[in-house]
Image (cartoon, rainbow, N blue to C red; front, side):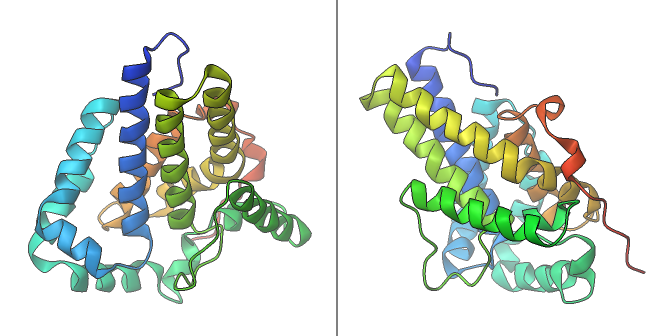
Length: 229
């Protein structure tokens, strides 16, 4: 999944579009469930999106697909219940869905990173909708932004020159590597393997691994949170 200058534009376009699709699915599940997600599940759209993206990108979406097939009938109610069980006031402290919560430094550093993330969004013309009641560092918000940026890459590959494509790609890699990937990897490790959100987090990590190889990340940033009994 890593960027490759030798890829033909058509293939690169298809991969960028597939990343946008997959990041969108991650965002749909990590943010509070909506009627739109329930409808997409019922119509089989989420399943088709995942299968197409996984095939194009060469990633394993089978664990999440198993949950998606199960949720076609139960839908939003079950997602809401699992969200409360996973990210409720007590249990959620062990695996918060916020990237800056895995920052080893405390205080000003976290506040600065939150401001930086918001600034990154603003630089690309993105603001949080009024009905979104989450912090800018929520993994669902960050995944939605990466979906948006992947679409910008796809459009640039069709309509713009090499310099414009590289500008978008550099921004994607910087945002993913500096702000999202370190915490996301710890987040995925912390989740119970049997819960719905574990394969969602694993898919997020797989997508990020294609943009920011693990060896390139400043792992000193990440703190391992204590397990709550």
